Length: 428
Image (cartoon, rainbow, N blue to C red; front, top):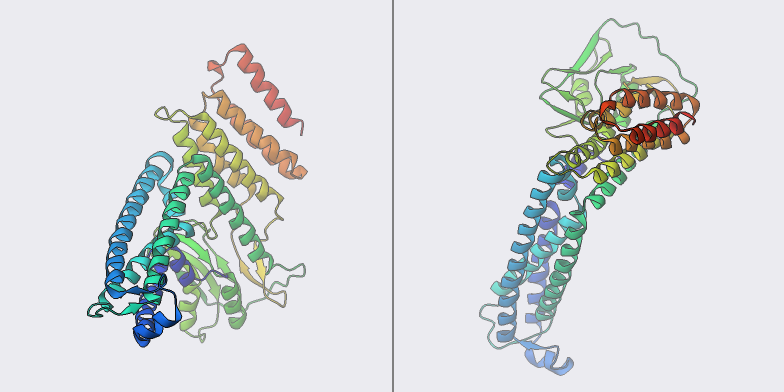
């Protein structure tokens, strides 16, 4: 697993980049002042043109102005972020807040503002008592920080304008979920083997790893688990799925080993499973689908009544389900380098993802023909690009969709349109 627990925490943290940029700004402020104080006024004025050299009084005035201006821009930016978060929570889904907060562009903009503010503030403090000395590096970097902050402020306004557009958000969630699918399948394919060996374990002692606290299952470290299983010559059985909510003392996994195996092994096993108070999309495919479902449900609610957005979400859910159907069937067993089975995991099939992705929309759109037709058309696209067994699963689920629709609200033309859509689907 390339994304370790620490790497994930750093990525999701809102303070990491601002702290990192602020640290370098602090170092740059000390270095620039020392460089300027190292050279005399006569040396600077004799080598550089007057346009590039500023006296300390002008530099202090400029630093003071820029410090206040950057702080003002930062305040406006934070206010804008709060507006965006409120919009996401109220109109789309509270789960989509993670997408904006964890967005690298948002964190980088705030980091640049913090760095610019700290550089000018620290430099202003170090410049006290400098007299009428000529300076070069300090005012130049100060002007550069002001230009960068202004440029990033314009970029941030453009960035936020794109984020608050629901189609842009839907597209970002879809791409993130597709990336999760590829990452999870690629991770598991590394440990699949055509020649598998089922180990015969003659040990009676069965050990169970339980959750130390409640939370959502966010990640499995497959590589470390297989390594531990090989070291202990055992097979690990999973009792949970990624995305499950577990309580304290819930069974996470079990394995067999003799009573002489190290006690520290249990802690090592437990550390390979990451529990979080909220779901994340690092390995949780279903979580991305859930975000799209919630946006669709908000869109078809009587308060918003935006079926076009709901259909857009359905199309993107169809894209994700189609990608899942194209992936090779995930084995429930993962092997080590020798082909020995080391992990027995619980897998979810396509029928599960079809249900979780569309059953709520089916329920709340049972009187909306456009949304129901949108579901059937998405299923048609999935069936067209799938193998015969998958098409049978899709057709069976399409019948479930049709049965849940309230046909009494349809006029004759509506009924014909629905039947025509159904025929187009089952002919694939």
